[in-house]
Amino acid sequence: MKSSEAFQYLLDHNVPITLIFPFEEEKGHIITGKGICHIENILNNSKIVLGRFNPHSLVNHLKNARSFQANFEIKGETYFCAIEKLAVSKSTIITDIPTSLNSSMRKFSRVEPSMRSPVMLYIYTPHNGTISFTVKDLTEQGISFTTDSPLAVEDSFMCGLQIPVDKGTFIFSNATVVYKIESLRTDRKAKKLNVFNNILYGLALFPHSEDAKKIRLYMNNRDLEIKKKI
Image 1: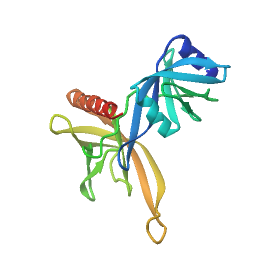
Image 2 (image 1 turned 135 degrees about the vertical axis):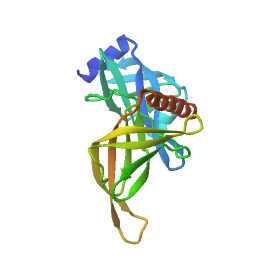
Image 3 (image 1 turned 60 degrees about the vertical axis):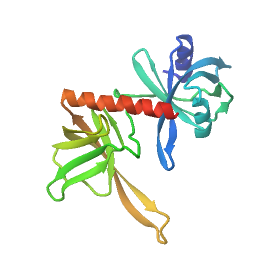
């Protein structure tokens, strides 16, 4: 679908757009902020006017971010695109219609834990025993985390999750590794340029239905917490 056709559809059918942007929850702790808006108008088939922001303070956050991602659904298909070069007023944002759209296969919403109340992952390994990681983000059926060295785990294994809900909840779940992304990071503060491995893992989780409810409760609570801060 062409971008111009998509945004005309959103305007004609009053379809809400979910906006995703970087939000500094605490100093140095950047998470994903979310909000909703609608298309108010299309100008000269080249620009869109975004308005009816929820929450109302969303405009200020988007102005500070200078760019954001727009997600929306059309006829059962989910699309996303980058929005840049913003002209921001008190209640609206005017921007160019993006040149292209991307389709999304993601089915589950995702939240990022707070720095003060993290979600912890525990994995048993044959060589190092039980090791723990701070969860980067999670869905009802998966999590991601980073580590400095490769994990020695089987194709399918049992893991534990400590979730800050109901004064602390610990659950067990079967898990499998669904992706492993290795990159390099540097420590520029050191006198010498030190290079480290940084590996991002994604796990698929298969929790018991009762445990899935606990994960869902945490995600709902965390979503509300982030919205209040925004």
